[in-house]
Image (tube, rainbow, N blue to C red; front, top):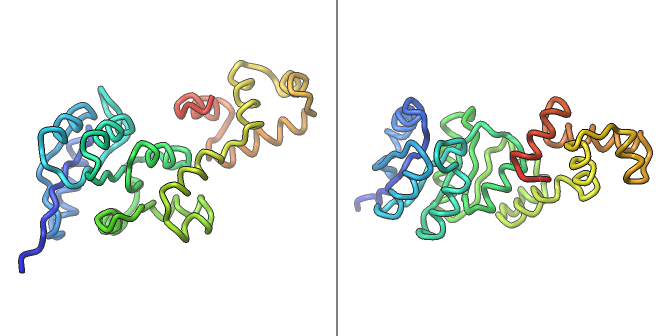
Length: 218
């Protein structure tokens, strides 16, 4: 009996990455790299006019990014499985991708076996998060592999108080000014700042503010 072949679209703006994917998947007889796209807009158009089963999607692409492209594709082709492959390694981005409709999230610096696990998981209608990120969501999330649970956790990783402080940081206020505005102590504000740096894995306050704007946290 002939094994079913799943048609794969690879969407990434780096041709070398696309060729690398072809090489990695050459022994996976159930997968057929039958289309490529160099930006999110092209990926959407090809999904509208083609018959793809899976899309391997980068996030940072020209014209339309991978998150928006995922939303659009899921609106017109809800049964297509979408695996995000990205260098962005934070829980907030994972949640954003899953909320857009992605079925899996794999880091580009993962090994080929991680990507293969993702393919096998989504074809069984499971959600897959690369192990180097999934542990950040806690054991309770990992145990049920629920997309809703991942999203809920990612949205709660920044508390409402931290969001308030982050907004004031982005406006250029010092810890002392923030403390006075929110009726907190300087030490409490500083602790919240350090907690956010640690949770979001960013090196300094400037990177924290950039992350907040990039991910629409404020």
